[in-house]
Amino acid sequence: MTCWFRDRHDAGEQLAGLLGRLGPWPANTLVLGLPRGGVPVALPVALALKAPLDVLPVRKLGVPGWSEVAMGAIGPGGIRVLHDPLIVRLGISDDAIRKVEARERTELSRREGAYREGRPAPVLSGQTVILVDDGLATGATMMAAVGVARASSPQRVVVTVPVASTEAHADLSALADEVLCLCTPPDFRAVGQYYQDFTQTTDDEVRSALRAAHERSPHDPT
Image (cartoon, rainbow, N blue to C red; front, side, top):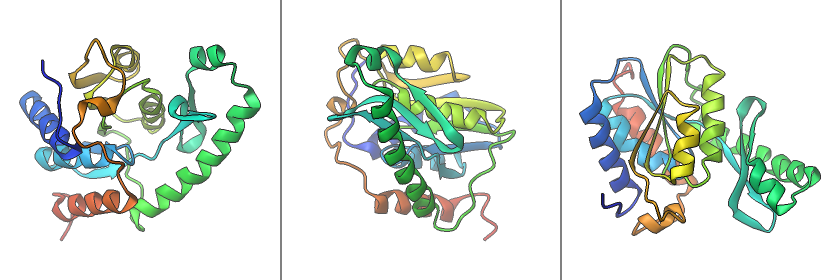
């Protein structure tokens, strides 16, 4: 299967088509994008499923001096997932991990407040939760997201991404109730290689996507 996306919106549209074919989805479905890049992918999914959209703020723990590579990830409530084989292979100390985690927890708190703009966090208990990101490399960030979601006792947790490494797909399949992915290329190297435009998503773009979904939400009393 050809695995190519113009940008995150195009990836979201293609994912929406996949989920639409697998429907119908229950009325208690909630779509959560992982900020920042997962939110513009999640918007077309939420609109197509007529489901509310929100964010699940998790943060990658980048390898010191090589921050684009994830050695783990964190989420609210003290959730932490570490990529132990990588940490051992690179000889990363516990102290180095703690320093990275402290910095990322500060950013995690900032984002959670900035993106919701006063809206309360969604209730996940009893919901069918669809977690969306723009792709999975190591899968550490999504593993943290699944851990955060599970802590709130949802009815079902579904991971949905345009592209993933075969390793990350297998790891997430053991944690989530289902993993829905458009493609898992055998020669996967990085998520960005499958996008024509993989420009970094801004905070303003995240807020704009959340506002657009909120205005069109079937659960909005207005």
